[in-house]
Length: 195
Image 1 (tube, helix red, strand yellow):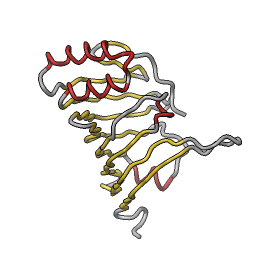
Image 2 (cartoon, rainbow, N blue to C red):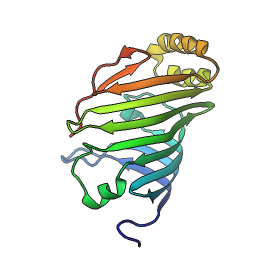
Image 3 (cartoon, rainbow, N blue to C red):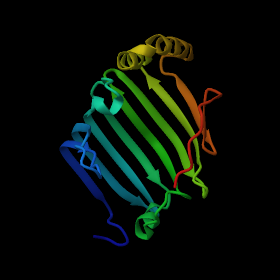
C-alpha cells in the first residue's frame, strides 16, 4: 500500500444488493440489486478519479411508490478535486469540495442519458453546477418514463416531442446556481444547503 493513499483501489461485486437498516423494530426495506458492479479509484496528483460501472440494476418498486423501472446499466467517470487530502483529513462535510463529471451514463433498454460537467459546493453548503445532459434515442427514454409514470404519460410524450426538434441526440444545459436548479431557462425549485 502506497502512502498517503493506495495507487489503485479496485472493487468488483457480483449479485450486489442493498437494504435499509432501520433504528427501530421495523423490517429492513430493499433498495436495489445489481448483477455486477465494478470500479477503480486512482489518485491523479492530489485528485481522486473514479471509473465504475454496473449492470442489471433493479430498483425495488417499494422505493419508487410501486413504479416499475426496467433493468438499468450505468458507467461513471468522476474526479474529486483534492480527493487525496479529503481521504487523509476525513472532513465531516462536503462543503468546499468540487467534482468533475467526465461522463455519468444511465442506460435503459435502447435509451441512454449522459451527464457531464463540474459541480462545486461552497462553504455555505450551496451547490453550483454547469452540466450538459445528452440523450441518445429519446423515444426509447420516453417509453421507459411513460411506462414507469403512466399518470404523466401525455406530458412526458409532449416534452419528448419538443426535444425531437433539437435533433436525434439532443443536448440540454442544466445549471445550478447557489442551490437553484435551472433547466432550459426554467427554475426548478431549490436545493437545500448540504451539511
